[in-house]
Length: 274
Image (cartoon, rainbow, N blue to C red; front, top):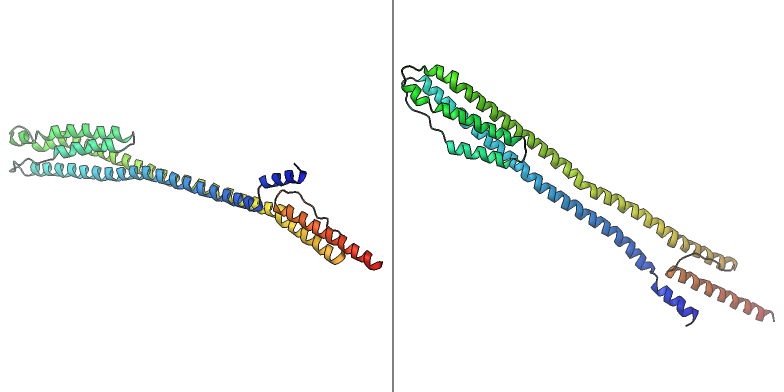
């Protein structure tokens, strides 16, 4: 096997100019695309999770306000009965609704600080309701002062229930604030891969620019300068640079043609002199 055939096989295995450019640009595009996908997936996952928590907090706040309004209305109705000595009507209260929704508050909110407060509301509610059930006996009794019973027994328990419900609502609001802050920080965290990708992409573009200048643009200018010197001053074309692609082959071909043309012109001059 001749040396030329060996060199030709080696050259065929090397990356061409087109392949190098395609590979470089494809690498930049792949990095940008991958980082964009990571950003989108990170943001989508975080957004869905935190959005569910925020929705649960908002729903829990509405439920807590509804239960507080129910308790306050019921307590005012009892006070009206106490004030109207002729009324024997005992106010109605949806006990099942209150307990089921209070239990749903305990299960829906993920914060560990909310669940003990929901239990406290249930305890204070149970104590208040047990005391309020004495209303019918108090009204019918001739020995019990209904006003004293209300302000000394029932009202303190209602104040305790209202305090626990206020604490529960405050805890849910704090959990909502924490989840909102988590959502905001998660948004910026999901943007970081995109920012890093843009930075890496810009760095790769700069590196690609230097690569093109060093291995293609500058050699082309040297080849043009060599050709200008050859054509204008009949200087020998001696441009050389390292590489293994088509540009080196083109330079070698120009060098061979220039030298052959120079030798041919020298022979013509010699023949002319004879």
